[in-house]
Amino acid sequence: MSVRAQADLPGLDIAMLTTFYPPYNFGGDGIGVKRLATALADRGHRVTVVHNRDAYRLLAGREPPAAESDPRIEVVGLEVKHPILANLLSHQTGQPVAQRAALQKLFANRRFDVVWYHNISLMGGPGVLALGDGIKIYEAHEHWLVCPTHVLWRYNRERCEGATPCLRCTLSYRRPPQMWRYTGALERQLGHVDAFIAKSEFSRAKHKAMGFPREMEVVPYFLPDEPLKAAGAAPQDKPYFLFVGRLEKIKGVQDILPAFAGTDGPELIVIGSGDYEAELRAMAADSPRVTFTGRLEPQELSRYYAHARALIVPSICYETFGIILIEAFRMGTPVIARAVGPFPEIVAHGGGLLYENDEGLHEAIAALGMNSARRDAIAHEAREAFDRLWNEAVVMDRYLGVIRNVADAQKNYRVLSMSGG
Image (cartoon, rainbow, N blue to C red; front, side, top):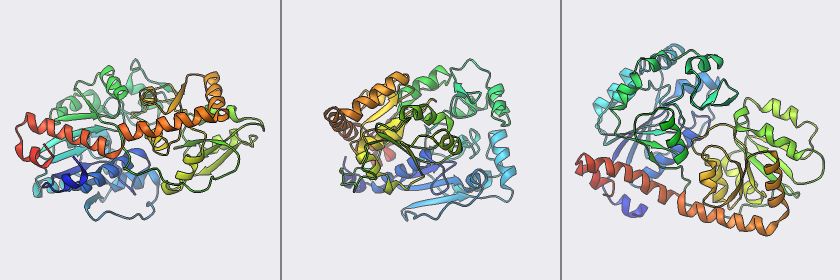
């Protein structure tokens, strides 16, 4: 169903609960929630987003830069008198202790057709799942349901396969353990949720392997439907490869720097910032082929993508999806990705090369850096795969299909009629 046709239907009333929401967010999950809220509003649905402003302030140590808001989306930023204590209590008890009154008031005054949970780690999860009525959906942007640190990164040094006690791993991060995870609290609250969404087949399988007891639907991230546009002049004359993302150890940039040592060959442009940035800059201090730009605004990235030989995605952790890949695909930019987590299933649709070790990385860089015909053929596959699988219209139909399936099972004809069923 087209956006125009969908907007002609009476809209659903949807509440979204998430810890982070722009501008009070650090990265992908908050941006993904905002894109989803916008796409739902485009289709005539009424969206209320409830997020935790205090959580961002405590972790960032500042207020975020001002950003434009969408008047169609109601945004409720929770704030309490003692934010440090409130967030510690939520983290430790798994309950919305300080935020409960505000949330109960919201749900008492409004009857939502759909309550959509995203990252609820500092919203009082899992206890918050019991609040509100309507169809309830949980979307797993991270692996929080099965991992106290969210990222399945054992002892802050290697991928977790589930054999290590979570308590010891949590302490290695210098975080207080969440004792509610050992009381069955999560399992008891899962019954309030009608459908769970994983962001990839890999993430669904990983949740199951780690003991998550509920079935999950797979709905990937999407990007807005936009034609391939002229991106402007190249940022530099010399050929280059690109990295875009947070500069943290788990993102793996340190592993690709040696491939750009010396003075001959294509260059590497690293876009982003983060806790590991100083170490990475020090590692590349004697590498004239490596340039760090710092963080750039999304609108500035298009020309970097468009003129890159390829985007390199060297993450060493288990991502739930990898939205950066489809950002490159939308621009018709090939991807070179480590064969870890969900990346193989994304690249299997065309648009990139996989590597498993340093030799494979060097081969992929040589293949796309020297062979323009092969690079252009893969670039065409990338854009074609994006249009087929990850554009807004395709993925939004899958999202609304999840709602329709639950509504059909519950004989909720009101929601069926308003969701295009």
